[in-house]
Length: 354
Image (cartoon, rainbow, N blue to C red):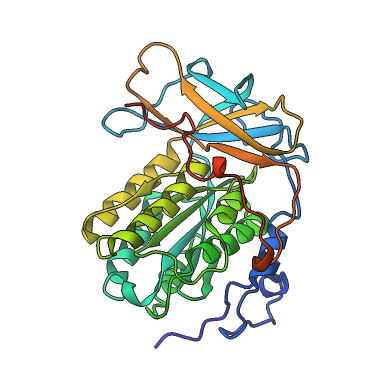
């Protein structure tokens, strides 16, 4: 028997800062509040000194991209210089002010599907999640969200393996799949409580979203804020019918492509462990590129990162497809605005070329 859950994914500050406050499972997090909180602040990325950790300042013109470069065998490519990267924003070249290749600590969330169909898969997925943590930077901080019809913050930020195991062990395997709602609430949690500037979500699900109030377009838009995380997705979709598999694949690819992460679709459950270890290595071997945007208008800014120079012809570069600049409101689910289709799955120039 597990002890009762002490926190649903309710982002009221008192639930995190006051030790005397206990939130029971019946205290469902309010999605409208989470959405409103996410875009309260339009923070910027600080000007960066080479080879030193960067900090955020209140300047929307300062942008940092975390970029993965892989060779044709899928291995990280080290030893590139700033001269090997060409960055454009809305097709205008940007001058790099900061460049580094370092294993920086990350604030990340593990979002694990706990719907009824996951019952037979959770043991293997949990072990893969723990191996992901073991392969990650020891300085990372991680939270655990288990989601079905609702999303639960079962372990808050920590690098304590025992606490992470306990969070993953809260298995109910019931209900539907409110994946998008869980992502939105987790984005908010990162926005307001992460200690590190580099941020990641790792999402594991086995089906199409059938319970969220959030639309895919709005979820991708929120994930595409200037300081949004990279989102890595693992879709265990082999048991889905053709239509649901297509919808789920589109959603996971949209989240990953927009944020500079990756979407994986293993054919068997035993492949998940290898994938999580690979994701951990990718995160630890990324380039950070910083620049001052020459664009002053609010709205979506399309970003491309390309490799130039000798010896990089067959390498693959992966980075976010763009970001939303300026402040904004996200209202209750009944009155969502629809994000531009440009942010949901269009070609971004960062994908491997045929």
